[in-house]
Image 1 (cartoon, rainbow, N blue to C red):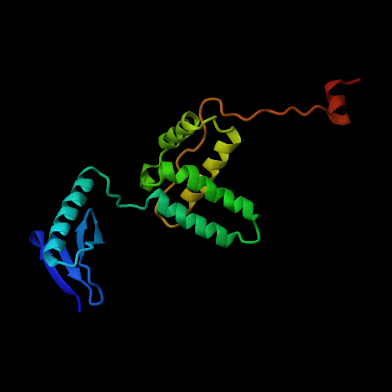
Image 2 (cartoon, rainbow, N blue to C red; image 1 turned 30 degrees about the vertical axis):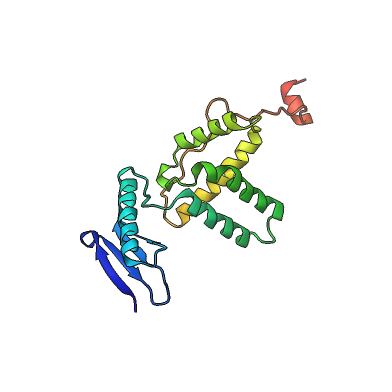
Length: 197
C-alpha cells in the first residue's frame, strides 16, 4: 500500500510506493500532473525537496516554460520511430539515417523544447539564419532544403495526431528560386513554328 502525505495546503503530494525506499512527489499545475522522485528516504527531507520542487515548477510556469502541448522533440522521436518502421524495404537505410542525423545534429537542438504552436514561419526563418551564421561554412542550399523537408515530415506527424492544425509556411524568402535550366533544343515541329517557311 502507498503511504501518502499532503503539503503546501494540499497542492503537493508526497508518497512512497510499497516496493520503493524513496519518496515521490506530485502536483497538478498548468493543466497537467507533474511528478518526480525526491531521491530521499527521510520523509522530512522528502517534504523539503517537494516544496523546493513545487516552487521551481511554479516559477517555470510563470515564465511560460511549462508546455501544455507536445514539444518538437517528442514528435521528432515519434516520427523517427514511425518512419523507420513504415518505410522498411521501401527507402534505403541511408535515406532513413539521413532524417535521423538531421534531427539529431540540427533540428532537435534548435526546435527541441519548443511547443508545436511556437514553430512558425518566422522561427523557421530564424533556423535558416542560425544555420548560415553558426556553421563553419554555410550549408549548401540542398542541405538546408533537406533539413526543412525533415522538419516538414515531423510536423505532418503532429497534424496526423491532431497536435497541430496546419503546417506553417516553410518557403524560403529572398530569391530562393532554384536555377532555371533552359532546354538547348527544339523539336522539328517547334522549330517550324518559330521559323515558318
